Length: 315
Image (cartoon, rainbow, N blue to C red; front, side, top):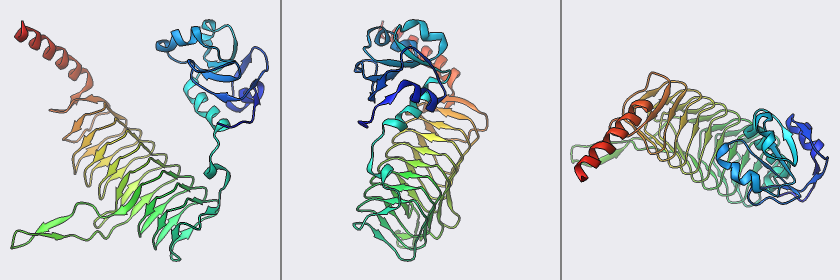
């Protein structure tokens, strides 16, 4: 955390909140449980109400409806979760945030690549030929960008990620042996994309693999060849997307989800963690389950029925 303190009035102005209380100085941001009198925290869900009542935080970000539950200094705003995200900007202290346009001497960067202004490339990174990286983007240590990859502006790629590798493409020959299919496509990543640690994004076989604006991938996500991920979609850790699958805009794919190949998932689909999607989804909504996948409300009813059946069997 940053050691620089901020007055509550400064934080309030930064996030667009109103200050209710004293204009004290805040040194860091912490959870309700661990916060002290020099820390700011946030409250947005009743499941944390016990923590709010016991917190020693110097200030709490909350919405007007819940302001009555805390007698101390408050920053009042409707979208508490978004305000929390903005406040972390103030207290973040990372090398890559303070050293834009820093290309590490311990990185390999092909002379046939094109790196825009204000880009950070950490030590151990490999950037091969015919790679383009837009301004303001950040590659943390040990990221590998293989040839024929385009990365847009203001992207963050975390350590260990590999972009542009070949996918699973093989054909059987007359001797029942696998013959490699070389991948001739590209990976095209748009602006404001964040990709977690140890993710893998395969290049297309003939067409391109594309990642839309503002897509967010958690750690260890795999995107296979020819996939298209729509803008503002977010995916949890260990999610895997099979080849040539298209995922629409504003989708939320939970962690450990498996998505089969050659599917189309429409916009605005939310899939619960550890679900398996084996067929296309053409209606927006919430989905859960694995065998078979169904709309979430139907799955909850089926789960309740399973419990009743199990209890009768055990009885």
